[in-house]
Length: 358
Ligand SMILES: Nc1nc2c(ncn2[C@@H]2O[C@H](COP(=O)(O)OP(=O)(O)OP(=O)(O)O)[C@@H](O)[C@H]2O)c(=O)[nH]1
Ligand SMILES: [Mg+2]
Image (cartoon, rainbow, N blue to C red):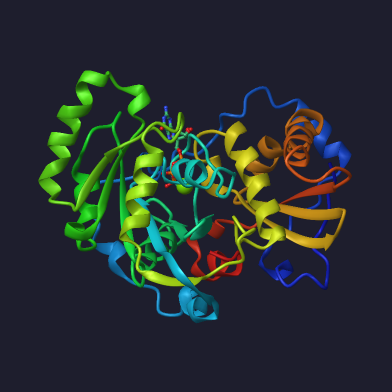
């Protein structure tokens, strides 16, 4: 665990609030914090994910790059079925877990907190005769911050220029208004509806759930469990059948297309999401600022001074644990330095949100 101040060469430095020094004395003071519950009450909608008033989410981001602009780079291979499939839905329904299950490897981070995914994340499944490129998207929700608006725009934007859209619905939550709103954002008659988390409901209720969701008039419905893999094989087989003839978009050994520094930053954020609570998960951003493999420096950005202590933990325990859990997922010998910085209310400031890569 380490502490630091922004450096002159750091392009992010001026965005960061003055009170960044965090020395060991401060860590000791943090030990004395009995409770970490002096959190300000924030709008619960951020955590709950959704309600009806969604008009403000309709702005599409103009300067968003078309990430599928590279489609023509693929080499054509005869008789190959290939294409792009967007995975959309409300927060926390299991989109990223499903992507990982389909790809058979960890491609997108997962947590039990809504709004985990913040960018579009691509996972590739290459098999003899087919290549499917899945696009995991942020959960669509009622945005109350600049970050929320940004990630909603990313999700909506991801649905254009794909060959199929999969709408994921949480079987344990039941089909609701939020799902209907998401479905209204695209032509659901061509979409595949995936009823996920069927391992958590009584098997006799699956049919009733499918019946409820059938009012969407989608092209196909698949009950699955991304956790156990139940139903995932049938879903993939169906998707292969939908793909047009096309080129290989990625070499056959690529599963995840995120650059490694971004992936490490995501792994750090994932571990922080696992240990933090209340509003803190939404306040955390991570980014790798130095990549001198095997030494990696990753910044953890929070919104308030009071949050620094929570991320650091008693005598740095939280940071130590996060570092250990991330290292376990990386090649042996990697050394990760974690730093905590405050960027006041970054989540509410469009320029900060953009600077952090969202
Ligand atoms: N029991 C069960 N839990 C699941 C299943 N799929 C996902 N989960 C859990 O649901 C929670 C949310 O999963 P994510 O994959 O992060 O959900 P998401 O839709 O990507 O969420 P956002 O990125 O926030 O939009 C996690 O705790 C997962 O472990 C499933 O099939 N069964
Ligand atoms: Mg996700």
